[in-house]
Image 1: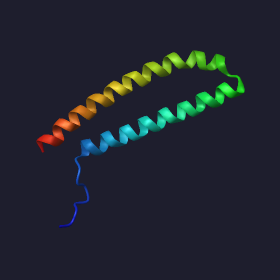
Image 2: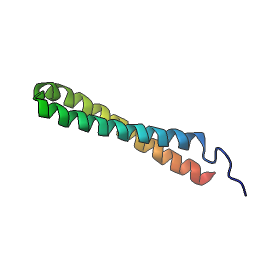
Image 3: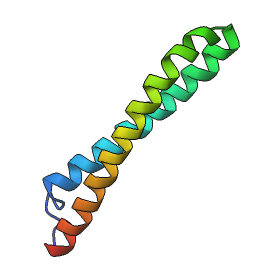
Length: 77
């Protein structure tokens, strides 16, 4: 039995890409945070961190809702 090229739905592929880039963004900001702390740019981080945490929490909630929707949709398929 041959595998189909697009075995998963478009919603599943979208959610996995969103999750991948969300996690890559978190890792990138963590690396940037450590590097900026090592060169002494704490005052910039203090200004940017509240904005970043607000955006991350909202994106995480959207991602969680998309994952739940995908689980329900794929289980009904």
